[in-house]
Image (cartoon, rainbow, N blue to C red; front, top):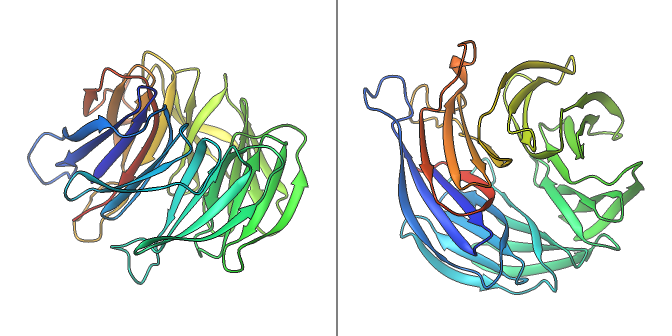
Length: 316
């Protein structure tokens, strides 16, 4: 498992996650794999899948990394604004290598790339103002975006065009598919669950303060974090808090990643969550221990930089 984080100081950080199994007998650890200034402006977004990762910066560029060699392997310069969101799509038939990279930026466009090799396929004009976030449907056929024009849009990735757009009652900052049937949106402190078929709101949840990151979990759970420094697990079927990790960090939390299950290792991940805060600290949590009075992180690492985003990739 590899974690990749971006920072305000233009640095990309890579960490290997070790011994996250109940039978390993070893203490879990975060081992620094690489760190270097990859952009000429703050990093706004990161994504990772299999052996590759990507970062988007306020310098309008996307950088591509080979995680096995911990090296940068190229740049994509198809946007004319800060790259605010990145997402890989990996076909279930070839889980070891992503098929596409989808990017969004403050120029209002979404770019579609072939991921082997990294070739630009199409640019789609989606929002009149900048794109705040995007999420790819599990099928890989479409993506949802939210923009600074207070709109929700759907992009047909197969045809390379916008197929739907609607006005929201307030500007959303995050959109995320939780499954093929449901997606989530965040607007300040409000989190809404929507039916993927007609975008109808099926559940509404309200955090104490502004939500800055989310991570859909298993069994209908959604993890949120942000300005209140807490990690909250929501039961999205009832709209109530299932449990929370209070004061998980000393400053606002900017990234959450569920460490995805690996089929080659029994009891690996899905029970573990990674979080990153703006004070530079990355922590790993064992979610099975939430019932304890004060949940402590399994391990942590301090990058001593202002982290802005976090992503993870499972690697054998």
